[in-house]
Image 1 (cartoon, rainbow, N blue to C red):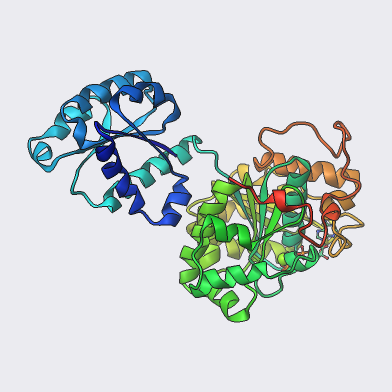
Image 2: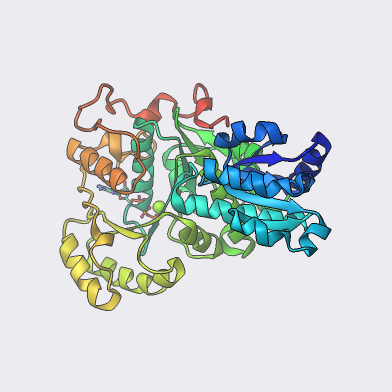
Length: 423
Ligand SMILES: Nc1ncnc2c1ncn2[C@@H]1O[C@H](COP(=O)(O)OP(=O)(O)OP(=O)(O)O)[C@@H](O)[C@H]1O
Ligand SMILES: [Mg+2]
């Protein structure tokens, strides 16, 4: 978010900027704050670069005229104004609001109040799709062994092929299936432990230290390296705030964030499901699977806050017992899901489906052409290939997935450092 601070003198500008210096570093990073200080003259020509205009108290009465002018040049701009305590007492906010200022603060207001306003603006930007933010897909399942990890890895490989900057987060702290399958291991996991035990802050820098690149565009975030921290992360209520921070920060750094929640329910997973753009529930086509989904939905609907973000993916590797329409029909009377959660095509039961772990590839590049086509379709439907067109599975673009994207840089960081975005 770009802030343009305007005040009469450089001292006054610096005074205004001091409020931002008082913010927590991680808040600055999460809001992706970029600050520019200018005088009144330069203000107009800099307006087009700004998301938020901050008018300092040194402008006095001229601030209202400046706000009116800024509002007519950039109607989408959010304007925040600071006034002296005396001016505030005199009702300065009345005139300010009529010229499009969204909030008036006194000079003695707490920086936290200012921060709260910026967080609110950021949340609105997010809603309107104004901030370039990573899309979070939380992969989960009602019952184990239905292919959740397989799908998470495969979608990440699709992203890799389409050059979407992607973070693959392994939150299955017990089995670490995703990390093991991709043979990812390293000291990076110590950073995650350090976040949990509080010995390191969650920042842009430490997130970069925690990531393990596996292709030019995909990085893995492992579970903590130690069991105590792993358990704390998923079971302790502190895990909620930690996961939220990791998600918010990774949204700034990546286009796509795919989380393998491992199906476990706890404070951390709860926070992730609540914060995700899509909750991808992988299910199989068995009777036992169906009853598990029924049970699972009763509490996940409340947790996620409705069914709008829930999408099912039927992975019928057990042998196409029930079709998607039949599963949907069975659940409809009790859950009123409508059609939207069933819009994804089922994943084919692929003969090579069980061979990907440890191969440096995933179901996407290992599977049959029909599997690859479906996985690309799913990725598109989930909104994680935005801006990219064509199909590698159909051979419509140059380049092929035949080699397996994760294979090239497999097993090490060499050559893959670009996967961790610089800025
Ligand atoms: N579409 C498919 N075709 C064939 N085999 C598949 C398919 N999807 C998954 N499998 C295989 O099924 C097995 C279980 O998959 P996976 O480990 O991804 O499930 P999970 O839901 O993550 O399980 P867990 O409960 O352990 O987290 C794996 O051996 C996987 O390779
Ligand atoms: Mg799994």
